[in-house]
Image (cartoon, rainbow, N blue to C red; front, side, top):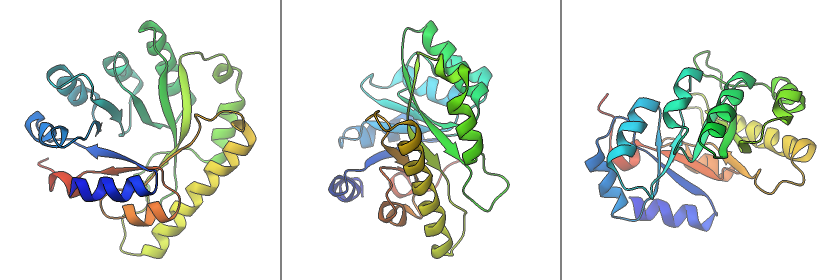
Length: 218
């Protein structure tokens, strides 16, 4: 399955984040030996534990909701944080990145689903963040794009519209705030059940778990 996914994603110049949350290091190493290097985790503590025992050329992506008091756990090594949903969180990432003499890549998470349990910004909140003096003073974070999660539904038309909405948000932000910044290029959307739709609607980064690892153990 990994080779098939990698082939399809490579054809569309998209990146595969293998979502390894709840799966033990041994399962991660199975994919590592097949060439996968980018893995996504939801919980900082779990990511830290795996980082400590797994090869150091793995790129770790934090894809779940992140509390500010947990940023310090992953700041020394995390490659990308997908779920930045507030100025306060971005400030803490910048602070912890500075302590570790790093620049941490981040994505702005947007609320695009018809589900109250999802997190994320709306466009006005994102604009306020990007125009704030606090953001403009940051030197240890780099915004690389957007992230969103579609509604968990069998209605593919609804999912497609939500992905299209996130793609449109990306284009507007790119034009207004990041026109001269080539690093702002990522649209992280699509998971095991909807990744093909996400690619059709412009995703550059899909987060695949159960297709690669089977159902989660917790």
